[in-house]
Every structure is written in C-alpha cells, then in structure tokens.
Image (cartoon, rainbow, N blue to C red; front, top):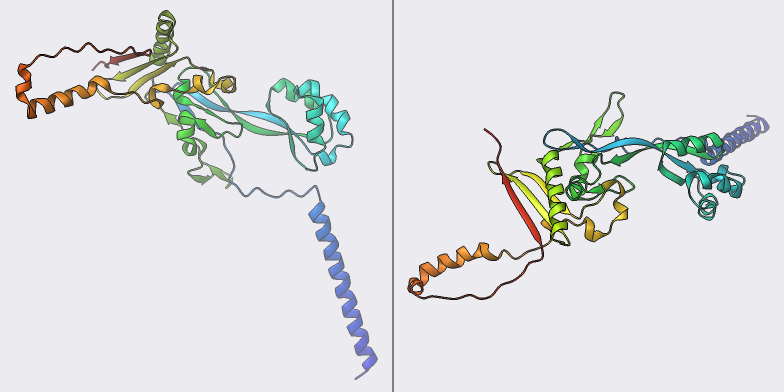
Length: 310
C-alpha cells in the first residue's frame, strides 16, 4: 500500500470536511442575523371577538379592523429626523418617539389602531422602517347603553369588566380552536345573545336619569324583569359612561352597584321572624307593640315588572 497516497486522501477528505463545515457555519450565521427570515407564528390566528347582541339581534358590541403603526429601529438611520416627521401626524411628542426609536429592538409600537387619515398621512411620508399591521378594535355602537352590563376590553382585546370579562374566552374564541378554509388554525369566536331588550334598556336609562336628576340623588338603579320567565330585560344604572372612552371615567362611575354592592335585605326577613314567632310563642299575638324607629336610605331603586303578551 502506498503510504503517501493514503495520507493525501486523508488530508483531502479532512480539507473538504473543513470547507463544508465552514460553509455551513457561515450560512447559519447569515440565517440567524438575517432580517428577511419570517418565522411562522405558532399561535392560532386571531379573528377578533364575537358580537354581543340584545334579545332581538341588535348589535351592542362588535370588532372592526384598524391599522396600527410600528417601527423597526434597526432600519432607521436618523431617529431624530423620523421622530420630528411623525410627531405632528401621530400626535406623540418627539422625546417619546425618539425614546422608542432608539431602543435596541426590531419592533416598537408607534400608534395602535390609528384613524384612517393618520395611517394615510404616515404612509405618504414613505419612511423606511415604518410599517403597518392590521388589528381588531372593539366598538360599541350605542356608546353608554347598558355600559355596566356589557363592560369593555383593554388594548389587547382582553375583557376587563362586565360580560366582556366574564365571557372573554367565549367571545375571543380561546375556548375552541378550529381550522379555516385554507387549513390555518384559528380561534373560534362566538356571539353572545342577551335577554336585554335594547328599547326597554334605553327607556329605563332615560327615565332613571330624569328621576335621579329630579331627586338630586347621587346614583340610581332600575331593573326590568319579565314576569313569566324571570329574564332581565333591562338593568340600568346612573351615572353611566361611554364604553368607547371608558378610560375617561373613574371606578366609581363604572361600578354597577346594583349587582356589586351588598344591601341588607331588611323587611324581606320579617316574614321568617313572624313565622317563627307564630310557631313558638302564639301567646304573643295578644300583645301590642309600638315601633318608632326608622332609617332613610339615600338610594333610588326602581323595580318595574313587565309581562309579555300571550
């Protein structure tokens, strides 16, 4: 066996392996730092939130698609110039924008769910590193109607109060994942139909507002029930708030004391005491008692019972 030929083969093989591993290392390095790599999102696709409807199918809450503006600071060569150009359009101060654009990240929000006019103005600037993404925004067509019942969602479309919070997983579809027509996994959002009647709710709120103003009360509540079924047709509370601008109101205004605060049942327990008295001390029925005590409750409570025809 030719020893020198054997050694040459060993050296040649080692050299080729070295070149191969070197090329693989370079490729991995480029892939790791490449800005063109798109990694598919592992989570199912968000399809917004389902409708909240009244008993007759009128929409009380829905989701619409809005464009949000974000930036890749690594693609922006002059952050100060970009901040000055964007500030008057997105109505964010130059220092705040500059702070975001100077972060060592590839993604920062500039303005979420911007108005169409703002999006078009920013798009017209044609700034490299400024991009757009579709997001869902929760809208309440009747503003403050049944505000305490419906509740509202936060900036990430997660329910924070009311039915939006209680049935968050149902409305957002987080409780069920399905595949759409192109085999993508999506969250199966669902609608929520209430027993609330939009018209009766509106009348109850208007009448309650007049009663509270007339009695100069701090707050008031009105509950409208369907006698035959016990369904709640209206649950009004004054003062109310605009669901589309819930951040402008404090917790006291947003709280529905009708179902949150505790209130001593009072006279509803007297029948129990009277029944016990009749059973254990019937002789006391022959005596007379005078009660001079009283208490003033500074809360207006209107309970109206309604029945449906047929």
